[in-house]
Structures are given as C-alpha cells and as structure tokens.
Length: 347
Image (cartoon, rainbow, N blue to C red):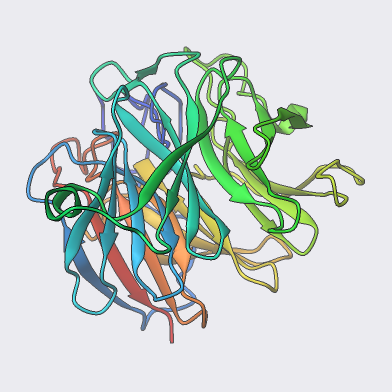
C-alpha cells in the first residue's frame, strides 16, 4: 500500500525500474527540477489496448521505425514513427519477457530474453539469454510473416546472470555488447559472434543500495565516445566510466548526478543524457556537468505514467519514450493505463 502526503511519499510498494522487482524509498511527490524546455510537444505515438502491457526498452532502426521490447510478454514490436502503426516482429518461445535491445550490425539487433513475473516482480536467475533479430533479406512464408518479421537466431545463454536488463553495443568491429545484470551489480561483456562472455564492469556504484528488501543496481547502459554511461536505480545515481577497445575500464567511475530514480536512458554525442524515471512519471535531462532538468511529465502527472526507456532520433530533435503504464507506481495510487510510446519533440 502506498501512502501519499502533500509533499512527501513514503515507501514505494514496488520497484521503480524496467525490471521493476524491488521496493525502494524516495522523497518528493513532484519533480524538484525546473523544466528548461517548457515548449516541448508531447504526444502519444502508439498505445497497447490493455492494462498490464509493459514496454521495457527501445531501439531505432535505420529507416526510423522504433523497436520495443515487452516485459509482460516475450515480444518485440515495430512502431512506424510517422503513422504510429504497430507490427509484431517476433514472439520468443520458452520465455516470459524481453528486456534490453541494441543494434549490433546494420539492421541486426541483439535482444535480452528471460523469465520475469510482472505479478511477483521476480526474475528467474539463470533463465536469461541473448537472441538475434536480423531484418536483412528476411524470407518467410505468408503464415510466418503474420507473426515474424525478422530472422531469429540464438547468440548465447548467460546462466550466471541473475537478471539481465539494459544493453548497449560497443563497436560493430568488436562484436561486443555490454549488458547490465541488475541484482549482481555488474555489466557483462558478450561477443555476439563467438558467444564468449565475462564481467567487464564491476563497481560499488553499480551495486544495489544496502537496506533494500531486494536488490536492483545497474540498470541502463549507453556507449558514447569511449565512455560507458550507466544508471544505478536503488543508489539513485547516474555515472560513467572510460573504457579501452576491449571494454576494460581505464578510469575511475564518475558519478555525474544523483538524487532521482534512473531507469533506461539515451545519451547524445555531447554527453547530454535523457533518462526515464519510472515511478516519478517523468523524463529528465542531465547535462555533462550534472545539471538535472525536467523534460516532461511529473510525479503527479498522467502524461506518461511509468516511463521506462528513452531513445533519441538520429537528428537529436525527437525523444521516444516507452512506458509501463504506471504499473510500478500508479499515479496518485490509482491511475494506470496500457503501456505506450510517447513522442517528445524537443525543438
């Protein structure tokens, strides 16, 4: 049960993250950040029909269409960024959920697949794998094309992982992706050609915060200019670390901003980050110097309940946001809606 007060919120009943499985505490009932872009245009591009639909992560194809993964069912969908038309790309067998997604080659994407319950908010450790979706030269029968829009193949299983979450591609030449393992508080390095994997990033700032009923540490990841940017949810931190060509850290881990509930995010080429804050129902902008400002939404706003992920368009003028519909923390303890993709025009 959640108790709402005039200016303070007590214990959040469920996890504020894309994986969403553990209670944590937070304070302000409305955003403490000034909105530096009050004229942004916010509109719903696409929305699923039923409550319980939960978008976890987003990726963009070269044609501008949006790929989304669902947490409540093991599906990847494609959304036309102009018309909002939605198409099921693939439904994975022997799994319940899809998580991180990242382009690893031209129109080829890696997807995290595993077992997670949106009823109990618990994952099944050891169930997580990385699969490949290839949109190039896809051939299928008419029946197959009704349910599948890309060739699917297995990349690797990571049985040591407790719960894989956000993912980012390193470089196409390296064939490496980095994947957050939120309960373990580490990021795995996976070679998508060989299937070899190992722990690449491991720092106190990525560990779940102490004193939480269940742990959730590192969540979202993004590679920009030899830096891996990361969100750490229960620690309420956003940071980065410089890495070499093998994704090995070559600098100290740097905390850029703190004091909010970061989920998945995107980072522009200049280091400006856009981060979804699931139970705070908002998207925030963080400058490379750590200044935080509100882009859209707010704790008491129904504009985009439960934002889980952000993705910038290639020109940086549009931000796409996926939501859980407020399942983690209904607005004012009551309002929920189906998951949706929100289009925010920044300029």
